[in-house]
Image 1: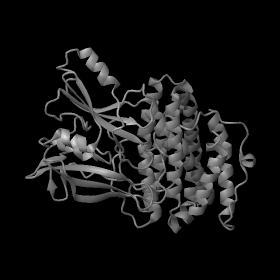
Image 2: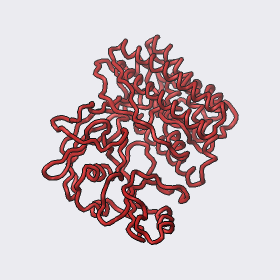
Image 3: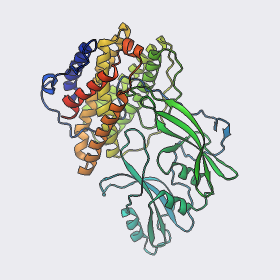
Image 4: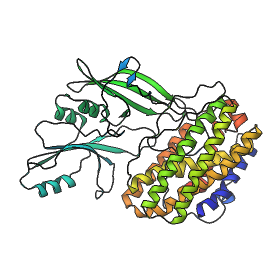
Length: 480
């Protein structure tokens, strides 16, 4: 585990320099890469791979789905368009005059040989074609730039498009306007939900009634946004979808507000939002959010372990992933106890059912959550262990810092093993995801954390946090 060994030397060294500098000069106090590097070069192939969360020691709020009742505010809904807790936007959507409809999604500039991801389909492909085999071959090879998916945070650029078959004709739906035109009349809950989420910013809230027919069309319950950094938030909204496809927001509720610096623990895909903990003490709020995300990291490593086994990864990577899962269980308990000490109450971590991911999807997630955010999180944890005024917090963060350093090393070791299996275009996507993650993290760190959080918990002020990230990038990430 060569990356872990290197990080065990580098991260405490960078944190020590930051700790020495935090009481005085505002000048950057980091030595050159040659001075702090532990020697040797990392053989990771360009910064990404199979993990699922972001690691750092700061406080994003956890969030809350709007309960299990089928209502949001005064709106009472009565139909759940999800199946087994998952919404497939292209499923059960009837388009007049065609045999088959499918909604597809692809990463921009992806390898053309990679099959697009199906977001659900309706009907039987090529059912009325004279030559079904030829029709299906055309359908399989059909690609379109479609419309750009509106996304949040570190999502890699993607696009969507629809495909239909009718007799021997195979056609692409290349715009949102074209999709609305093809549906013509929004006469079903499934069609209303499709239009509500087609652009990509929204997702239907599953697990309870989420659609209702109205006099003019439909109401659809969705969530959107990202709570990561000051000024960000996740919202739950009731959208009105008319029978001719016009969409307006009827009701909007903030269910999660981001706090300064939110990268702590590995955030799994499908993490359910919970309302931010009500606690007057910023340290209590911070560790309540940390405990929620540490608990969520347990799911991340369970999934990662299963994926590594399925991909035939070396046993040392599988074993390290299993051990990381156990570490996160302990971290969740430790941070929850610390939160309660300061009056915080951690929310239970809930994660939506996972779907099978491609090798590229695994690599992309790790580019942001493992190789960037968790590596930076381990560095900040070392800094907290040295500078927190509270002795109990220092002791706890020392343990967490050591474990998170191993987790960061695992992310880079998996990257070194997994990324060479990708195509050249896929590796470019992963590199871009890592660069975007660094840029987004820099923007988050520019927000000044609460003074009590800086003093008692050892969180770095904005300038110091940015200097830490710059040093980590120069000494490790850029060279990996």
